[in-house]
Image (cartoon, rainbow, N blue to C red; front, side, top):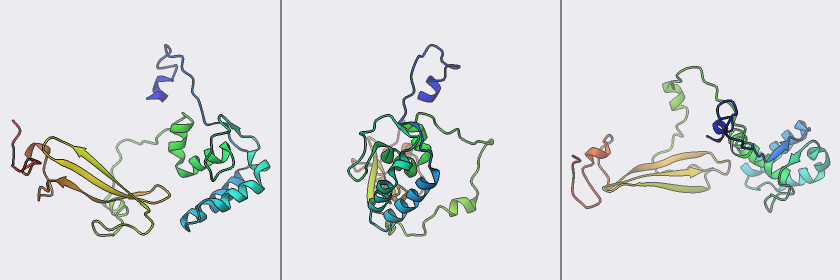
Length: 197
């Protein structure tokens, strides 16, 4: 929405300013790629980013060259600078970083309607049974959509790399059916069936 409003061709009456986390990216792509490898390995092996931070400390002058950080003091306890913090956000999810932190969303590539094939859908299945948590997951979150007569819920298991997998979902009370709409919920929170009019 902000991207559309700040487009002067579409909304010349808005005189907004795009702020960014980085006004200049670092020049040394090679060192930052090495940093990304060390960081990913440390996270996947449960050691966090300590080794990546040490690599950054040893090469900081070269890795900082060319970077312009909007808020240099914004970084976490296990980071050394605002630049490292920004680059960690970028490594976590570049499209989200560009949209949320740089206010320059990457244009979506669309070529008409996109249809997923059965093979593509099957490639997303983790192969685990319902309510089974993947080994790499460290966090669970539950989402509940509260309605007057029933609750809809989903439980997602998250890995440190922010990949999530739905491990459980359904309604309460259980409708004991795979397909239904809210209009034909049979078991309600009040313990009786109802019909919408």
